[in-house]
View 1 (tube, rainbow over the protein chains, first blue to last red):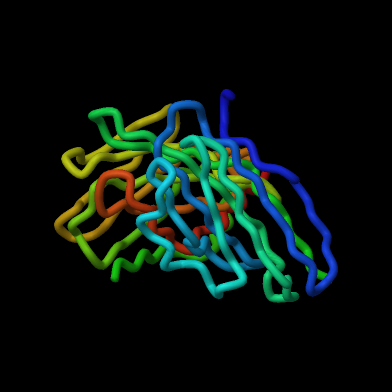
View 2 (view 1 turned 45 degrees about the vertical axis):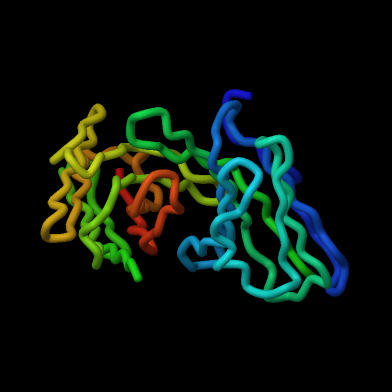
Length: 115
Length: 112
C-alpha cells in the first residue's frame, strides 16, 4: 500500500481479555517497529523487526506482550490478559535502507482502551 | 543510553512569527535525525530527515539543522500559520535500521 496501515483504529476491551493489533508496513520495507504512546507521554519503543526476526525486544513491558512478523510484511502485536495500564495508542512504523539513510514512516495508530 | 530532550515543552506564538524548536541528544554517534509532526489523535508525519553527514535540510517553510558534535538540532519554522499547530517530535537513530529514540515533543500553538 501507499502508507503504513494499522487496524483496528480503535479497540475497547475488557480487562483480562486478549487483543491483537495489526500493522501492514509499506511494501518492500524491511524494518518494522512498534511503539506505545500513553496519554501525555512520549513514544515508548516496544519491539523492532528486521525481516521476520526481532533483534530488539527490549521494550516489551511484560511477558503478556508478544509480536510476530510473517513473510517480511504484516506484523501482529498481541497483548494477553489486558490491564488498564495497557491503555494507550500503539503506533507502528516501517523503514527501508536502500543505500541511503533510512526514513521511518508511521501508521495512524490503534487506540486501545481497557475498561 | 541515548536520551533526547526537547525544549520548550510547549510554545504559543502569534501567526506570522518565525520560531525555533530545540532538540538535544546525549550520544553524538547518531546515524540520522528525523523531525515529525503529530496532530491530536493522529499518527506521526515525517517532516525532515537529516543524515549524520549533513548540516541542514529544508522543506518549504521548514529548516532543520544538525550539529552532531554538540548533540543538537533545531527546527526553524518561518512565517508560522495556525495550521502549523501540532506537536513536533525529534528522533535520532544510532545506526542502520535500528529503532528511533524520541524526545517528548514540543506542543506548538499558533494563534490567529
